[in-house]
Structure formats: C-alpha cells, structure tokens
Amino acid sequence: MVVPLKRCVVIGASPEADAEFIRESVGGDDFVVCADGGYITALRAGLEIDLLIGDFDSSDYPEGFGGEVIRLPVMKDDTDTLSCVRECLRRGYRDFVLLGMTGGRIDHTFANYSVLLFVAENGGRAAISDRTSEITALTGGTDGKDFLTVSNKQGRGFGVFPFGCRSCRVTLRGFLYDIEEAELFADIPVGACNTVVSEEALVRVSDGSAIVMLYESNQK
Image 1 (cartoon, helix red, strand yellow):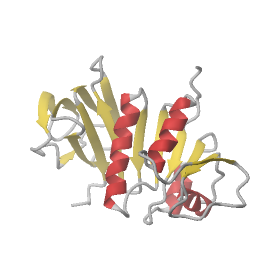
Image 2 (cartoon, helix red, strand yellow; image 1 turned 60 degrees about the horizontal axis):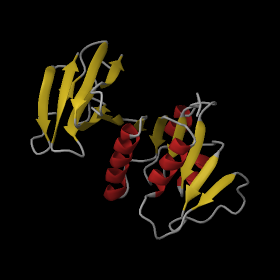
Image 3 (cartoon, helix red, strand yellow; image 1 turned 30 degrees about the vertical axis):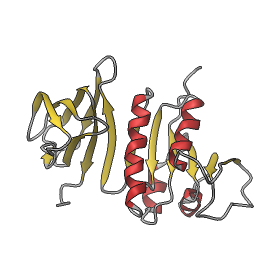
Image 4 (cartoon, one colour; image 1 turned 90 degrees about the horizontal axis):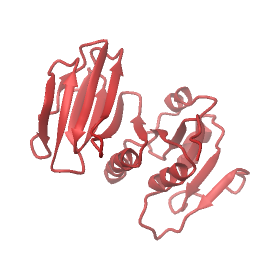
C-alpha cells in the first residue's frame, strides 16, 4: 500500500475542546476524522469532515451529514478514538494528530494515551495536542531507534514516563537534565519537571515504551 502524504487529524468530544485552537491546528490537506461527538467540535471550529466514526451513544446521530459515516455498535471493546485510528491505519495513514482529547472524563484522557502507544506500536506517530501541551508515545520496538527531535521549544516544560511497561531506557540531549541510556521505572517518576534548553533537543527510547510530554513552562 502507498502511504498517503496527508496527515490524519482525529477530533474528539472533550467538553474542554478549544474550537479556535483546533481550527488553527488543522491544515487544508489534512484528512479530518471525528470520533463520535467530536463532529460537534469540528463543526464549531468550522472544519470540513472527511470521515465520522462512532456509536452515538452520548451524542445525536448527525442526520444532515452527507459525508462518510461508520456507525459502531454501542457494546464494543475499542473506544471511538481507537476505532478511528484503527480504520485510518488500515487506510495507510501513519501521521496522526489528536485534538479535543484532553479534559473531561479522566478515563477518556488516559485511554487516549493508550491510543498514542497503539499508533507507535503499529509503525506510526501520533500526538495529542491542545493549547498548552503536546503528548506523544515512543517505543524502542524491534530496532531500538524510536526518537523525537524537539525543535525551537526552549523554555518548555518536559516530562517522560514509562508507559505500558515496567521500565524503559531513555536518552535525553538538550535538556536541563540530560541522561544517556538511563533506565526509568514506572513507579519512580524521575522523568518529571525537566526543561528544554537547546534549540534542537533529542529524545530517544531504546528499550520499552514511554509517554513524552511538552507543556507551557508557566504550568506548575
């Protein structure tokens, strides 16, 4: 399969979704997918929707919507967001941005972290983005080469934590606290409270998997 050049944007239904930020974050070439009630957020942001996926148990079915809809059963294992990601991975997308995914129900926010890891483990990259933070997942995988370059983010707060594993091995360069092939453990949160200090910083996970967070430094 030829991988599409477009980025896939998945929009969720967080009650704290910032419509203006979402509108600013979506480009004209993005493939826009809404997870269930995320279509309300997308319409509020003035976006055109390419695909709508959901069970519509917590939002009304959009009777006037003329685009593609995949209606899911209410009783299922996957969240609506994971269903969106599965479908778009199947179509060949590998670059994902998840908007309207933070705030509201804490279990939904945490479940969306799991979606980030799911994408990473299936050969893609996904980021949850809102006005104050950006969150992604890295996994050492089979080749131990999963890395992230952080450009022009000096002064931003940073955190890295093992996720989906007991521990992970991490290298950080260009941060207030640099480490080289250090083992981080899930029950000892030493990856918190770091800061980007270089114009170009590097995060590499060579074993295990991790959630990586960038956030506004004025957040305490």
